[in-house]
Length: 410
Ligand code: NAD
Image (cartoon, rainbow, N blue to C red):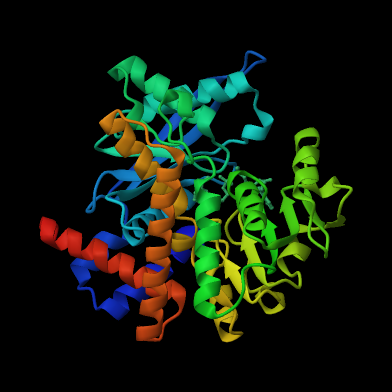
């Protein structure tokens, strides 16, 4: 199953339960606009490399298109299309006034210098500038991109259209970014997990947590989960993982990470592979790296009682069914990792108002929205006797279908 087939699978199930008519189903199942571009970049050695880039706008019934830009070798048309659709459902579920979009460039930023990365980002922005805009489509960071990438994108767009901070979110705070955006996705993951444990009648404090991925989302989820009293027993990145049954010393691990390429070599833990981490005996497993890591191959061996999808699409549909059958609770991506786009919404609002909020206000508003969305998903799952993913998709698809209807799309 391709990433888009997996994303569409959950949509069609919701469309069946909601009894959407054929026209509405067709409009919501496919992208509104798909832009594919060549991105030629002069590399440091003088050669020219031509990368493939995409900006895909899935649905704009509820507002301007919104979604991140991914730089990764696997970021092809199908993957970006799947991620754009997920953004439509996520934005509707967390109830921010945005449609869904995603962008990607098929490249490996780890093998590129800062200069090459900057030239790529500027050129890509110029190529997609016809379809983005403050009230049209607002990119943000995703895997392989960060606040620096957003600064280059804002600058490249501004050279053509004038100073426009609201064109991207996830910018550095000095350039109009929001306080709290950097850690927002990880913070949202932790708030949602705390609320989920409350609803499930278990304790977050003292829970043994394993987190795959130590990038923006994984790093902050690790720090904030520990601050909230959980015991982070394992983390990993692309180079492998580290495990300590008594809980990892996160300060020492962060220092180690600054000096080393990977967390795998950390002296305060035992080495383990990414596969081992996923199958670890723990209370809560948080995949926060890439898609499709829990599949029919390993779903039978997952030992956690709760899986929180901090990454997009880490559990594929077959594995989702296996985990449900085994009574393992899966908190779906469109809920769990919605904190990032929520604070991106606050950043966009601040840019439009030309007024900066204080960190406390950002965190309070994020907390309110994450708790409300998590409770709404649990309430619907209990009343309709569905899984959390089914409940989340039902709420989201219903909202987008209703917006499409009252706009007069169908
Ligand atoms: P990132 O690039 O900052 O970090 C990615 C992490 O995953 C790194 O630690 C990397 O080493 C690890 N990784 C990469 N390939 C791996 C592999 N094959 N096996 C194990 N680990 C691997 O990315 P991020 O922004 O933290 O995003 C992580 C996930 O969260 C993605 O699925 C992304 O779509 C999703 N997400 C991110 C945000 C955000 O605000 N950044 C918001 C919502 C969802």
